Length: 506
Picture 1: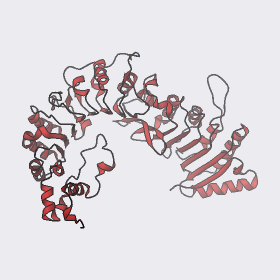
Picture 2 (picture 1 turned 120 degrees about the vertical axis):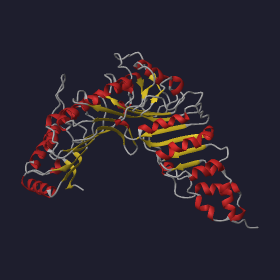
Picture 3 (picture 1 turned 90 degrees about the horizontal axis):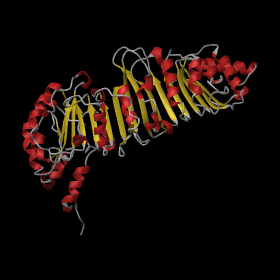
Picture 4 (picture 1 turned 135 degrees about the horizontal axis):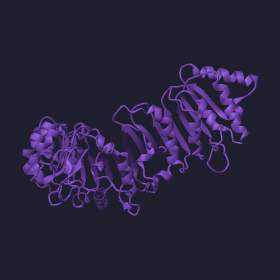
């Protein structure tokens, strides 16, 4: 006897309801720390209630389907879910702060079964209304997230909106707060797997840096740690205690955004395993000072990922974030160092210095691929490129946006190193692939390029497997014309390059 859809067990019907509709974005991509609550589209199965009376009955009587609730301007669906979930746990995603604040009193009788509570970006004044839940216990709450509009422009409130003690939050494992005072104690934080604090401050008298690190040391369960504008709230540290090495064995992601000195002192005291994804974001005031180097302590041995990198990208725009990214090709970016300024800092005038700082910072790293991205007209002198290339004798692949002029790069590649001791050596002796983009044509380029490549050959270096030059406008055609004329008259580029590609920028 054939089984029809009307004969399906309720368990299979519920499975159909759960799987119905396009997958949620958060099912496809990981929940990014710092993002606002994304809609879970938990009620996307609702149209199936119109199939027949039986399906409608199954939906209405299945608490599982009502457990995850998106709350927008209207609370109607939430009111239905509170009834139809019966005693099942709830996951509440609020997307409008007026609704979230006015709804809290209605939720008080149900707080004992709230497993996830995500509150939307709200003005700091609305945090005062959260006091209504101060005396309430959350026995099953696993995840608490609270966002605030423009947290960098705010001053943390002067009270603790959530009493996060283990007696009231015994199962809390995920915590994301902004612009609030937090009880920075081992009892509160040691249970967490994920911690994100943005523009928060510790409760009570200003603790010392050692007290801050005592709590970090107790957080052995942490898998992700994100701290923005938090470390510098603690009393200025004394000189680095080289005997202290804190291990966070389960940590997989670390993001620190703060004053560079605070970040460096954290790294000096915590051993970051090479499997950890690291983001260090420093703020520059009126002077560059140590630049990228200031984000790390003098001894960077606590950050072994530095020694494992084989590919690094440097992005130095005229304005905005200055970046160094350590890359695992086709996989991930395990290390990112960045600098930003809240004022009108002149990055352009410091780019040569920053490239040298990068070379000093990574000089013991056996890089195989280096990519440097400069904006048009940000042309660096050849001594800067010489010092940069001298730090990485193992390079196989160079990709450079040299500000429009490729000549200083070619001159540097045909030069010798200038070590303080020992013999001078050719630069990039194992280079196989060289690419330069967004170039501006000039008549002298082809001759100087050939001189540089000839010089490398005279130094005994092998020919390049690939040379790619990409010009703006009709520069590529002019360069090819000049090289063809040179080939006819005296010298063929093929003596130095196996494959040459001269084309226009896309």
